[in-house]
Length: 74
Image 1 (cartoon, one colour):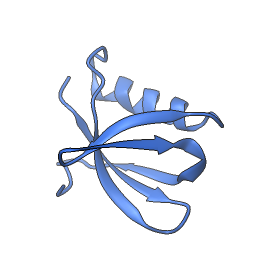
Image 2 (cartoon, one colour):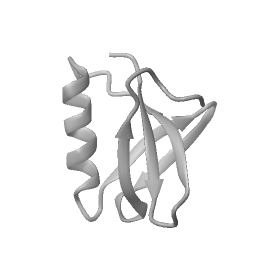
Image 3 (cartoon, helix red, strand yellow):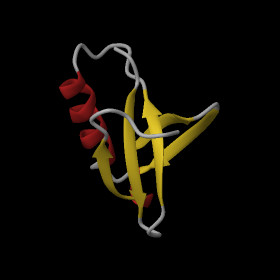
Image 4 (cartoon, helix red, strand yellow):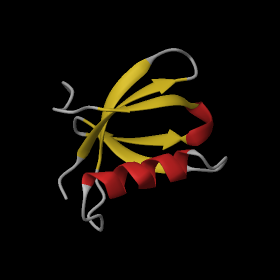
């Protein structure tokens, strides 16, 4: 599956758009479920991309996640 664009709101109040790729997932719903279950764990970590940069999201720093229907501008 192609990367899913997520708008992440951090506990600091800032937000950023990142792309999360899960090659094993068969559908967008599976990817969203994986993201939510990972970030709901205290030690959850997601490896994402912001443009050409690798970004690691730690669950303790994320306040909310929004799935962009058409994709955000990265």
